[in-house]
Amino acid sequence: MPLFKRKPFSLLEPPKDLDPKEKVFQIRFSKEIFRDYQEYLKRLNLYRQRVWTCKVSGKSNITFEEALVSEHNAMEKAKKMPTELIAHVLQMTQYSTLGLHELVNKIYASLQEEVFEGIELHAKKDGSEARCKILKILDSGDTKMYEVGWICQGKTVISTSVVKAADLIHRRAPVSRNTLKIFIRDATSQSTPWIIHENLAKKYGIPIEPPNDIMLQKRGRKRHEDGTIQDGRKKLKKDEGLTNVPIKYPIDDLLVRPTADDTVLVKRPPLATDFRVPRCSVGDLLMVWDFCSSFGRLLNLSLFSLTDLENAICHKESNALLVEVHAAIFHLLIKDEGDYFTILRNKKRKLKVNLVTWAEYLCDFLELTKIEELSNNITTVRRGYYGPIDTDIKLKILRELVEEAVTTSAIREILSERVDQKQALAATKRESTRKEKEDQTLNTEIAMKNDNNQTDAVQDGNESVDEQVREKEEKDKSNFSRSKTEGKRHMVRNLETEIEKLSIRSSPLGKDRHYNRYWFFRREGRLFVENADSREWGYYSTKEELDTLMGSLDVKGIRERALKRQLEKFYNKISNALEKRSKDIAYKILLEEAVLRRSTRVRAQPKDNPSMAFLKYVNKWKEN
Image (cartoon, rainbow, N blue to C red; front, side):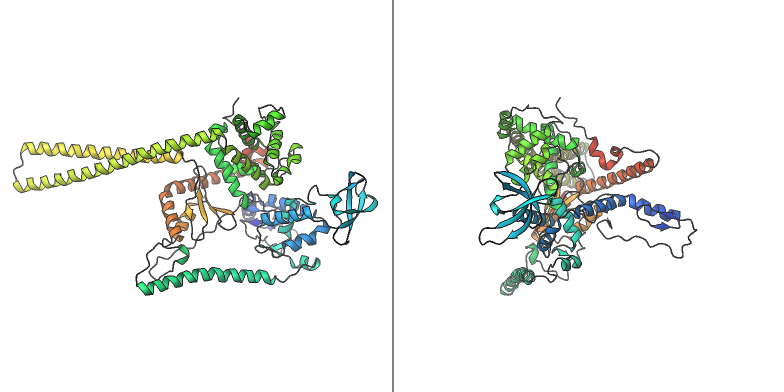
């Protein structure tokens, strides 16, 4: 059953005492029955919203019906898991404390190295390679031997023989990473640690009781963490007793002790995690998008939103946005005339990447990286199947491209120019701030002098005309000085804006007590949070969540005090960005509903849907 906002959802029970002849309203895909038409429409509109998540594949931001289809397709993929591998995969999954991404990679690597009865691979036969099936694993001491059946056509075994382990050829794992992800999600009832369903455990002989070493490891870690904190607190208490001096805040966040006089902190709001890419790959997504946004003019690549890039990467077909991003970086590497340029010149390729040949240039770059995880996809890309590649692999390829692009002379030159400009503006700002303080001091002195003159005149009762003129001139000078000061303040604010635009590196706003890092990007209306332990990501997207977050920070701690100051400094900018994004999302939902209503009368084109806006991307800054 699809998840509603990442939470379990239950269908409505049929109405009681339903007459077979009674006219009712039924939702086609959920089979729910309604007597009241308004209730039927209300439920149907809920199913049409993109707030649903496929429980099996984890695909989010889709409608209820799309989630049902996704679950069905995912279940079909899960059934493709070879039966001879199921026990091994379940054994490695049970009570594992790894994240999904790391667990899948670990299992995938083991499947590439180990051999199981029933799997098909290639082996050396009479000096050439031939397809075979492992029939039996033979135990012959130090040397592993395998009885194999040679396959001629289809899956027909024509003969058998015994081969050595060295004669087996592992071209790829017998199952893809995506299939492993789906199978693990479907086979487990809990994560961190992963626990498989009890019926599967009994069927394949997987232990149900948690291992003792895991329990001891957890208890030991807890004792160690508690001991560290307690030791710090004991030391703090001992110091207090010796010196009798009160604690001077801020101190390390983990040593903060709540007291009765403290302000009550609100509960920190939960993070949204409805990314379409794996949570552990969000950092790569942000890195690529921020690079393209910061150096778009140099790359001749017009701007696009983070959501469009995410949707484009998750799309299972090649699309213009991704092709333009790759081509722009390829052209930058070619102009730099480095290693990549040398490879292209040796292969006598044209130095102009286009929408048709871009895949060949990508294969050349993958050969250059010499990263096995990436280079394993060269054949797939060359055959034109870039779209179905795992999303995390696509992002890793883009990350490598960006890291290579940052080393080019063109990027380094821009970075150097921006550093010089930023330093010059910072010096101008310091000088303006100094003059502003001098003017403020002067204004204060003039104001005090005027007050004294007025007091003396009142006491004398016979103020002369000359004194009145002099007083008026001083007031005019004071007003002029004030307007000049306001102008300098306005200039300082403009300088701060220009300095921010010249920032060459995105830095986190700060960290909370658990060392989680908080990020805000100028062109994205979300406040991102990077988990310190697992490197997974979440985000806040509303002004209310921002206010609650700030109310949950304890200023007695060093890290949370610094973080709160940064949030207060950029509060207007962050809250405005969050509100703007919320309005944009509400507007897109209205457009989607309009498309759905129109599609009941006229067949709507796929690109009409706002969520598919990335398909309409046109690079307006592209060189002709």
